Image (tube, rainbow, N blue to C red; front, side, top):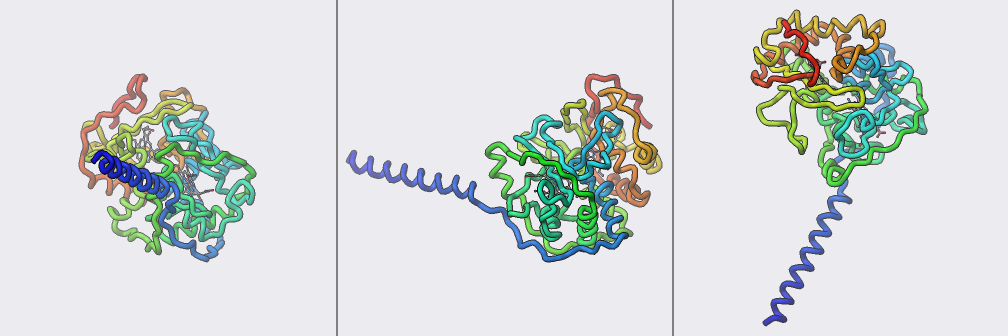
Length: 337
Ligand code: HEC
Ligand code: HEC
């Protein structure tokens, strides 16, 4: 009898060890979903590079993470000579799950992505795997950039190819377990993406809010990084950085705690107030009460029709009552408008 039970227990244990081990091995060895990179060579026509620069700076704000930035100045402008040279994000932003590095994406062959094909660059941006098929940490917002149209992503790569190569060796991203294995389910092949219909303001606005990555900063998340239900773009996410703390604003149309009272004119002015700083360089940051991660400088260069479309889309969102103090510990600025 005992022998029998021991035998059953033994085989059960063995099954657990074998299956469990296999499960863990599977998690580690599993490859992310991916398709072969396309063999495209993007057009380097001047107007394509110019469009790509616009997508890099304003539409998708790539430089927010991948460029050298000067956070001693208002708005943390990109440093022109360090555009795309990469940043160790976890040295600046607290609370990331390990060492997180936005790599050097200039066409430098040793420390940048100079040896990557254009197809591999497009795949990384929209599908989330690197040249060797490794899953990228989705703080690189490829789950949103998958919406970038073929036209826009090709222009973007033309701009990347045109950047002056910068030699800037950086460490690699090293995530803690289990984040390191869980992220393997994030990459997805995308295929071909048609351009959005710009004449449909709300649809165009939804596209711009998606690829502008507004949600990654303005939609609060739980401790597993899942968006909180019913809180779309309601703000309240804390960014604790070496330059100061800032909390994202509620941009839903709630009249008390969001942007409900804002006219479209006022909304546009909020962005265009930074235009002068974006062109001529911003003044030094007066203090941590004015520190922000909101990409005001880059977004101030957006076309008026784009801001108008974003405004129109934001008006369609459910108004969420969520009072936010963007600079905790400092006196509140007078409420506007
Ligand atoms: C919020 C920060 C953030 C933004 C915005 C961002 N990236 Fe990234 N990007 C990252 C991080 C972090 C990684 C590395 C992830 C990893 O190593 O797992 C990365 C990786 C990459 C890679 C792969 C490079 C390599 O050597 O593996 C490319 C290419 C890239 N990004 C291009 C872009 C482009 C183009 C944009 C704009 C459309 C952009 N990124 C916007 C954070 C960002
Ligand atoms: C990197 C994070 C980040 C991204 C990306 C981002 N925001 Fe913000 N945003 C913030 C933070 C933090 C604040 C609060 C501090 C401030 O006003 O500068 C803010 C403030 C704002 C405000 C001012 C609200 C008020 O009550 O004064 C508006 C409007 C806004 N964001 C719209 C957007 C839109 C639209 C997008 C996408 C196109 C976006 N933001 C993308 C971080 C971000």
